Length: 275
Image 1 (tube, rainbow, N blue to C red):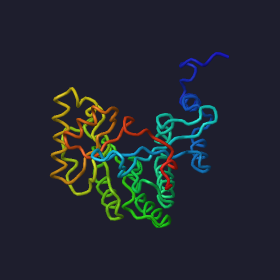
Image 2: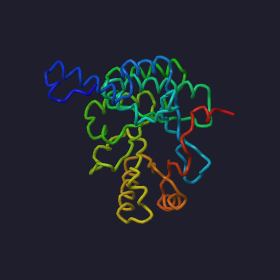
Image 3: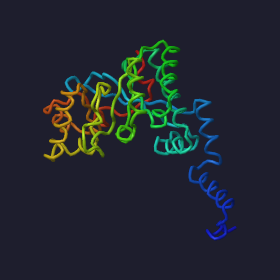
Image 4: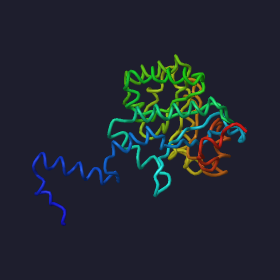
């Protein structure tokens, strides 16, 4: 049977039903919301992590970024780019964020080679006034200190977060948690949003880092972030570090921390459990 033409589904109700069916096909699931709920309820997601390396001592991992994957029978593990947009579209990011936090705290309670974990948090969670309370409850239940968690907030959330972001970060600091700004330099044209004492780490956008060896402009930009970090009190992390030449450049510039496939690839979080 031929698909209906746009003219055949022009009516409001018919068009809504048509688009809903197409949304399901775009997601690859008959009922995307139910599939996401099932994944959360049945622990069909998996936690991975990628260490953040101390450049002066490459064998030392001060912390690691927690990443999430989704089990799929036919395709093994789905990368986040294939399912995170669905969580975001259906306003389920806070549920996913809390699932990730809970799993991360279970790992930290068991003990491991990396004692501090960085968890990405969405704008939806930042805007949820009850979310810091949920974090406090999870920390208490797991008997893990807040200092073991660092929350990563992307640059877009930094620029758009406003008072909600300020309240959220203030609540995190009361719990003893750290805050990282991820991908800084992608769009930001000013350091003003970093003012205050709530930022502990700033990850420099990978597009800047990758150009460092051959671009004077990239080096100038990174030096500016380092200098502001000295004044405001945050540490700089270079992301997307992929080769030894770049590591040497970062070391010469005094960048303390780095992350990337050239240093350590993401692995299941249990790979970093205590031996």
